[in-house]
Image (cartoon, rainbow over all chains, first blue to last red; front, side, top):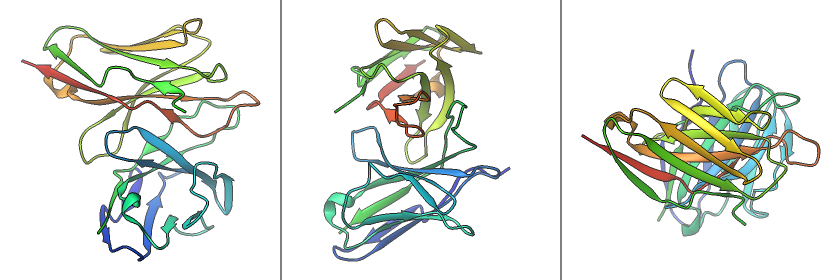
Length: 116
Length: 116
């Protein structure tokens, strides 16, 4: 039973390029969350999605960042025109559901984005 | 605004002894708490959780204690083993109406080192 899959594991981009990070949730999970970890800090929530819906994007920067979770395929976190400050580890997590149940999230291995 | 705080960035414990990791939170709407363990270059791994209706939850060598009045929780590991050396993150979530469903709020982590 595969866990949460993320690719690529490492991504290097030059300033101004686009970064696309992919996440496939665990089998049977329909909720996906993206978190970002800056050096020496904890994980910070970015966005929460269900299939074809953005439930909570209050942690996403207002510009250059977008996320989707289409009916088919993985969830995508997209960062346009990357800047050096976007360099971080980006983690995806998935869960079964949250409504009326405790929210146990399972994390992928992360994508380490480096912006040159 | 850090709603979950882990004030000790590091803890060093001898093998066989007890490790106690502490966590404080400020948001009274939190009613579910989790501990994650993280190795370098990997995603967080779920360890143990506790809901606010309990004050203790035990799973093998791991026990989590919750003191709601003090808004404090702790993770006890006994006996500690060298393989427990990792960063431990405390996280909090809310299910009740008025809190933000889904997202986890993380502390900055405590680096535990267990030496032989």
